[in-house]
Length: 448
Ligand code: NAD
Image (tube, rainbow, N blue to C red; front, side, top):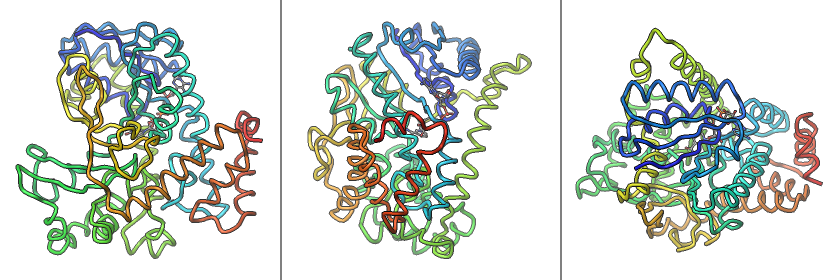
């Protein structure tokens, strides 16, 4: 089945390789046109060249194009994937440094010491909005797959403003359930589960392996095997003491980035100071110090594989599915192969009871030619729902309100929601320091 896929932000350090591999390993999409789009010509050319060579080596026919012109990329698109990060990781880090100087820590911080920091989100919202405007005009029937963060705020805002556009947010964090199953001794075949919530706040409420309830084994593993496992496991890895403590407190297990650095290492009580973190085997700063160089390595790997004519690209990057969902989802829709896939869509059908209907939820969806249909989930435990509303939904609402109105006072209110804010003066000084950065002129003008 040939379709047209437009990749916005095709040079992404996280997703480029996975996209290219999965695309080339999906024979059902043979003959498709894929337009790579990025504003960085070097990254664009490397991703495009790599994909061309990869397709030739695995023997799949794809019509590949590249452009720096987004409107051109959208012409005739059936699927638009957005992995673009406008402001870049260096700006995230520079903002974090200022935040540290104003008393903020990673660990339960809301939109500050978080990779969805408000000074990054601002540019993302503007990009998302302009892609929607273009899609309405150029390819209104296309599906929009949002992979770039912030997925929760992005799908929430766009779902409200552009309800007629078919959209879904994708996050690979749910794959943490396979890691949990693995340490309990089960493979992914035969595993069924439910992980409702909102992006970066999803909780395993039940899991079965070939019909056997494996939830009781979580506590058994903790009692009998965790000490040995934690002796050698990396800090802040999602299977640490904090995750199991949360399970004991609330009766559902935090999955993916719910309590890991990628989602801001919620909640703050495991991170109040260095000693507390050490007790819980948490080290989010160390995790980020590993993550940023890892992204640089990915970019170097793409360049090496794209331009090293001596080596076969399939030797450098073995042909193996990545586990990301974007290409699988496109195949399901284009070729009518029904699958249940985890996606972020507005909670219009009350799929996660207790989350407002105009907020995006992360749930199982039935994906086929009919589209992306939400599946009803069981309720989250009440205490988790309370935290979801306080620590994920409320900050997103406050930030979107600030963004829509351009009201700087509301941005300050967002900062006042953070558990590390002690006074209004601290919030004010921190906000002014961020806005004073020379490259934030657009944001300074927006927030009055
Ligand atoms: P990156 O900086 O390596 O890549 C982003 C790409 O976007 C770059 O090639 C850049 O040139 C391009 N870009 C910037 N502005 C653009 C524009 N206006 N139009 C087109 N392209 C543009 O970033 P990354 O580490 O690959 O992360 C990308 C995004 O994915 C981030 O938002 C990150 O938070 C998010 N992310 C999502 C998940 C998930 O599972 N959903 C996981 C990890 C990261």
